[in-house]
Structures are given as structure tokens and as C-alpha cells.
Length: 197
Image (tube, rainbow, N blue to C red; front, top):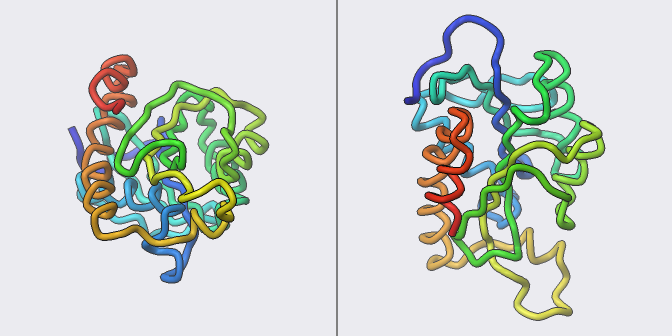
């Protein structure tokens, strides 16, 4: 169940990670932004209000009031925006769902986790540091591994998808709203069983 936001403070924070600006729009590192856009579209809301160093929008998902967020701090400082919103609304880490790119998964694969380490992802590293917690659920979206071990990681995550990869990623983005709806409804096991690939 998706819909417009009713009055009252949000109970959940749904965060898509990426880098702001047209230069980064179609890059691997912006998979989280794209997944969040799909969630916002399904809810019939826009994520355009500037607040907490981020673009935000409010929606009701799975019967819960949610704040949708795209940090505008650049990836390495994502935690600044997340911590600001979490602190303001008193949202605990367990109710913060983060969607982001993962190079260890094939393009278009999805992996839901209850918590975990940063796995070498700078956006997640920043969030863990600012929240002082690893206890937030996440949705990893596969963007593919580096073509060879010596390939520069920074250059890889800022590279653009091939047309075939874009098709696979679009399918992953379309699965994101359903996964998040189950997660905020307290049906984490069902979300993992249905969407982990």
C-alpha cells in the first residue's frame, strides 16, 4: 500500500544513496537514487524538498509514515544527512532503510540485509559513523564487479551502465518498492525470501 503522507512525524527513513548532479546521474554509484525514485513514483510523491542536506519527500508505505531521502552531500558524507533526519524525528537505526549499489553482486541482483558492516562502501561507512550503529536494514542493488582487479574502484563506480545492464538495473529498481513495503510492514523475512537474488 502506497500513498500520500498523512499528518504526523515519519516513523521510517528510506534513503537512496548517490551523488547529486547530472554528471553522475546514470553512474553505477547512483543505483540507490534510481531505486528511491521508483519508490517515490509508486507512492505518487516527489522527492524535491530541500531539508537535512538532502532532497526529501513524504509518503505512506505499508501503512507507515515514511520520509524518502536522497542525500545531496556526495556519497562519502551520506551520514550527515541521514543522522540529521534521524535525530530530528527520533528514528532509530532499525527503522532506517538504505538502498545502495553493490559491486559484489551481478547487475540487477538484489540483496536485503537486516544489518551489517560497510563492506567497503563509503556511503554506508559514513552512515555507520554518524549513527554509531550498523543496525540499519539495507537493500543492496548489484551493479557488477570491476572488469579486472587492477581497475580503479572510483572510476568503476562512477562509470555508466551498458544498455544491457541498464535493462537489468531497471528491473531491480521496479522491485524496490515491493521490497521496501514488506520491510516497513515488519515482514523482513518475507522480503528477503521474495527479493533476494
